[in-house]
Each structure stands twice: as structure tokens, then as C-alpha cells.
Image 1 (cartoon, rainbow, N blue to C red):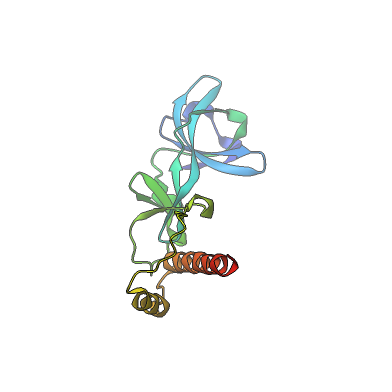
Image 2 (image 1 turned 90 degrees about the vertical axis):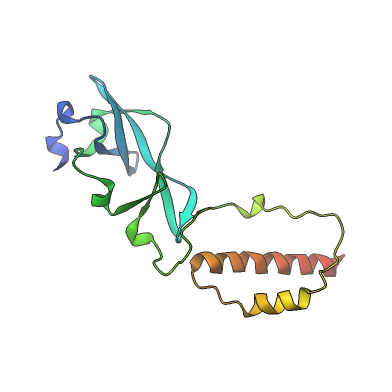
Length: 170
């Protein structure tokens, strides 16, 4: 049962309940871990560096944070589940169902790595494999079927263009 801001009664909040906390200019969901006399201890529901079918993945942060009752914006008793918020559980992680690309056939959680973390071994050897023309033809004819595949192909094409430019320059 959702209780609005004016009716939040701290004594009714139980371990496992979901609360919405006002932080600066943002409202964050949190799970109640412990109920103290003057405050709550919670885990915030935060985005992590993974995607699932092109949707941002969330998790309850492992850090336990103190929340004063005055910062509570909403309270959801433990008969509410994350499904009631349109959130789907995937391997101890969560996604908003309306953000999931239903056409994406990949069911894996994918880490979002920055391009800075992609390192190419620079041993000065620019030799191509014997079947490089066939590989290039297959790559060029491949049409990505979803946003994750399009992002991957775009990144590889970008790296190839950068490498070709470096070869032409040196």
C-alpha cells in the first residue's frame, strides 16, 4: 500500500519496505535494511555499469546509508514488489520493463565498458590474416538486429577507421 508524504508514519515502516527518498533534486528508491528510532538504514536502488537488451540495469547498492524520516517522499509496504513499479528481476539485478528492447535476442547482462578500457596490443605487426578479405566481406554484409549489435558494429568500424588512419599516417 502506498502512503503519501503527509501520512508517512515512521513507526509503520518495516524492514524490507521500499521508500522513496528526496536527495537534492532527485528522488531515489531504497530498500529498508534496518529501522532505528530516529532514522532508517537503507540500500539505494541505483544504476550499474551493465545493460540488458539495451536497458540500463539497476541493483540495490551494497552500501548501507542513513536516511532521516524527514527526507522520505513515499513509503511502500512490503506487500509491494518491484514488479508493481514495472521492474523485472534478472540475476539479482533489475531493469525497467518498458526500457527493454523486446527484439533483442541476447539474454545476457552486458558490461558497459568505456572505449578507454579497450586496449589494442601495439606490437607494430600490421599483418592481416590470410582470409581477411572474406572476413571483411562478411563484416560489411552483416546487418545488426538490435541496438546492442548496432553499438558493437559502430565501435568496431570506428576502431578500424582509426587504425587505418594511423597506418596511412605512419
